[in-house]
Length: 82
View 1 (cartoon, rainbow, N blue to C red):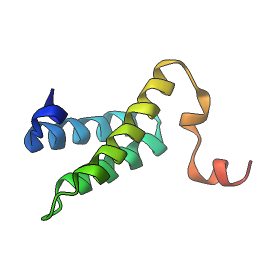
View 2: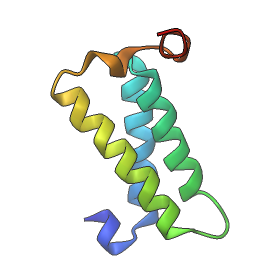
View 3: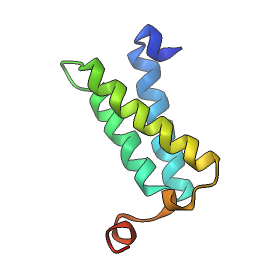
């Protein structure tokens, strides 16, 4: 697994792919989370605990989307105005 091996190239590639796919599928919050993970992975000084936090948050969003949670598709504006 890329995380266990701390394989930066694979982690960047996969987070970038998820960012694009989530955007195309209408998951703006997941898109933003994938972008945050990708940005962390591109920092000069890698902060592995912070990267792990971003990755865990993204994995939770993916799991909820796979279970059909409709709130993942809400825009930031919709969430703010609930």
